[in-house]
Image (cartoon, rainbow, N blue to C red; front, side, top):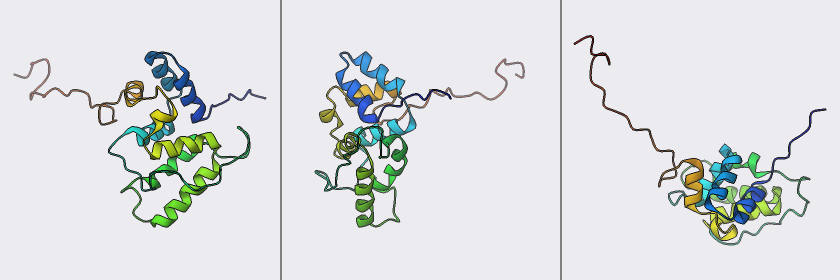
Length: 167
């Protein structure tokens, strides 16, 4: 039987970032765990242009008491649903339905990951995980100030062949 590799929860990854001593170590940990889902969560938590439709502050949900690795969903899989909670992204679902979906999402996650999502919503990941900063996140994923990968420099093209043979 093939050996299963353990995939840490995002809360565990960010806890390792929090405990790392140097910026380089923090960046390295994020790069080791670089996935679309992790980038999505961190972008939603740090990018000031992203607004959540869920009100800031405490969320009235029931934390999932199940131990790690048992009866709960993982943020790595659930991150694809976060777009519903971003202002302007989901214009179909009514606000009260979004809030209900948000509670369900939190209640399905391990309680540490639920806290992570709430901190991302409130743009307070840096308070939950000291040393996790927008600079560390941007450096880890090669993002610019707008939290996107900058476009490569494009050189203006002159008409004709590069060798000049057609001139």
